[in-house]
Image (cartoon, rainbow, N blue to C red; front, side, top):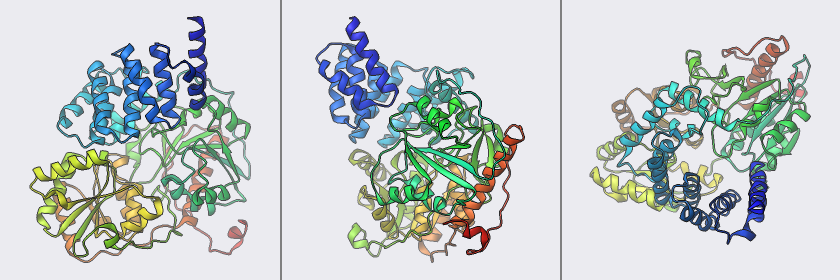
Amino acid sequence: MDALEDLLRAALHEMGRGRHAEAAALLAPHAHVASNPLQRYLGESLRRSGQAQAAIGPLMQALALKIDDIDAYLQLAFALQTLQMKTEAAECFRTVAALRPDSVMAQAYQAHGDQQCARWDDFDANLQALHAALRAKPEAADDEFGVPFALAALPHAPADLLKVARLSTRFLSRGIASLPPARAVDKPRLRIGYLSGDFHAHATAALMVEVLECRDRADFEVLLFSHGPDDGSPLQQRVRAACDRFIDVGALDAAGIAARMRAESVDIAVDLKGHTAGSRFTALAARPAPVQVAWLGFPGTCGADYIDYVIGDPIVTPLADAPFYSERIAQLPRCYQPGDATRRIVPTPRAALGLPEDAIVLLSANVVHKVLPPIFEAWMVLLHRLPSALLWQLSGGEQADARLREEAARHGIVPERLVFMPPVDMAAHWNRLAAADLALDTWPYNGHTTTSDALAAGVPVVTLRGDGFASRVAESLLAEAGLPELVCESLDDYVERACALATGPKPPIRPWIDSRAFARDLEALYRRMWARAVAGLPPEALPAVSVPVAPAGDAADARRP
C-alpha cells in the first residue's frame, strides 16, 4: 500500500507541473493494478498528453472500480470529445449532473456538452438547472471550477458570469503563494510579458502578430511566455521574430511560470487566455509583476483580484459595466481586437467547396456550441424567406451535423440546404470564406475572430446586440468596419436585415486594421497603467484616449529596426 501511495503522489506531482506524459510513463507499468485512483490518474495523464484513445480503457476501469467517480466521468467525457464522440461525452456530463445536482460545474458541463452535439431537447431544463445551482452557491465559495466559458455561451446576466469567474478563480488559485511584492519604478523602457499557450498556428497569434511587429522597440521590450506547442509554423516563426525573447514555460506549473516571469523582471504581465482551454493565468496569482492585465482570450472578467486591468473598448467594456468586472476596465479607443493587414485572401471557387454558383450562401462559421435554438430558428425563417439560400455551417462533427439537419427538417427545411464546412488549416479557411454572400452571427456569444475573418474576406456580418462582452464583439468590429447598421436589436430585426442584405448589393467594408495605430494606443494604455503603479496609486478605470500616430518614416518610426 505504501508503494502505491508513493507512486500516486509522484504521478500527481508530475501532473501538477503539467508533465502529463511523464506521469503516464510512471503509471503505465502498473496499469494492471485494480486501483481506482491509479486508473483515473493514468487515464487523465494519457488524455492530457494527447493520447485520448489510450485514455478510454483506464478511465472505464476506474469507473468499474468506483461507479460514482465524478472525476473519472469528466475525464472520460473530455477524451470522448477529443475523439469527436460528442454525444457519448454529453452522456458522461449528464451522469455527472445527476450525481451532483448542486454543482455549478456539473450543470455547466451538462449544458455545454449538449450544445456541443446540438442536443436541444433539454436546453431549457439545462439552463434552469445551471442557474439554480449558481443561485444556491455562496458568494465566497471556492470549492469547484464553475466553467465560465460554458456560461458565456448561454443566456445569462453579467453578474452571473462574475460570480462564476470568481468561484472558478478561487478554486484554481488555491495554494499558490505570493512572491515578495515587486516595486514599480519610473523607467524609459517597459518590459511586457505576454503569457499564452497560443503562440503557434492559432487565432490569437494571427490576431497579434502584426501589432507585435509594429511596436515601439525603443520604449517597449516584449517577452512571450509560451505554454503551448512548438509547431514550427510560419506564423509561429513570424511571432518569434516579432518579440525580443520567446520563453518556453510549458513544463512549468503556475508557481514555476510566476518565478520565471519574476526572474525576467517583467513590468507588465499580460495574460492572453483567461478562462479558456489550457490556460495558465493562475500563474499571476503569485503576483510576478507590478502590473497584471487580461486581454484578448476570454470575453469577460477573470474574477481574479490579482489581475489589475482588463483591456477592452467603449463598446465591449463600457465603463458602466464596471460592477461586473473584478478588474479595472482599460479601454482602447478602437476595437480591442487587433488584426493583420498583411493577410491576403485568395478566394476559393464555389465549385471546389461544393457550393452552387447561383445560391445565396449564408455563412455560419461559428462553432456549433454557440448555435442556440432561438438563433437557429431565426436562420430557418431566413431559409423560408430566401428559397435560393443555403446555410453554410462549420461542421461540429457527424453527430452534431446530423442533429442540425434533423432540426432543419422539423422547421420544414430540406436538410440538404445545410452544407457543412470540414476542418481545414487557417489559410484555407480564410480563403473559402469569400465564397459566402452574408455571415450570420450567433448570440449571446458572438463570433470574435470568426467575425473579423469574415470581414477580412469581404463578407458582411449581421449580428444581434447583447448585454455583455461576448455579445458585443461583433458590434465593435462592425463599427470599425463602417457597418454599425448591421447591429440588430431583436431577432425580428435580425431576420429583416439579413433578408435585405442577402438580396441586395454588398455594403462596402471599410479597411479597419491599422496595426501601427493599434500598437501606439496599446502602448499608451500600458504607460498609463505603469504611471499609476509608479505613483503608488491603485488601479483605476482608464477611459479610451486616442493617440496620434506619427507618419511613417519620422523620428519615432525610425527608432524601430
